[in-house]
Length: 173
Image (tube, rainbow, N blue to C red; front, top):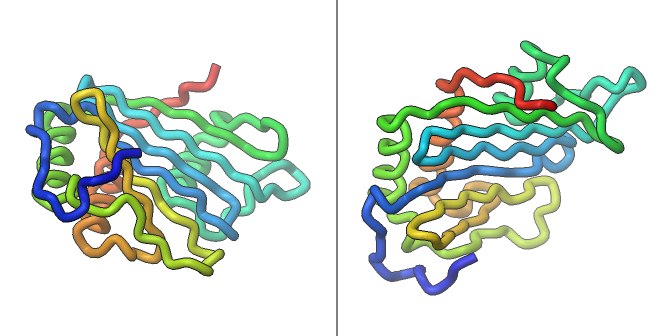
């Protein structure tokens, strides 16, 4: 993680941003996800369900909607490992989609944000992690309960919306 950006106006050129990612564990819902996009067109989505019923199917009360939809549309792409059900997917992000995310990241001042916006003592709202790789460096911001503010929330919504536009295929071996 990088620190020292809070309060400064640093923002790398959009063309230096090479990866954008969003991940979280949904806490009491028993699921986690990681969505990542690279500037070279590679898109990845990793989903895991930890709360399983006796048939080893996920109990899906409130998982990330993308993971729930991927499970509903292609449950055979999920593999049981230890005490969880995992699905790994790949896709293609267009240059226009990636550039749109990179521009929004700069416009919303991501590189000026603090590294953490965490409401201490809140155990049922684990943090999300928004990560941007640029020029060989990484900036990550974690927050829960939207504590990072509207600008960070807008970035996270844009990542999720872009993920919904991707045609995902199973990347399981």
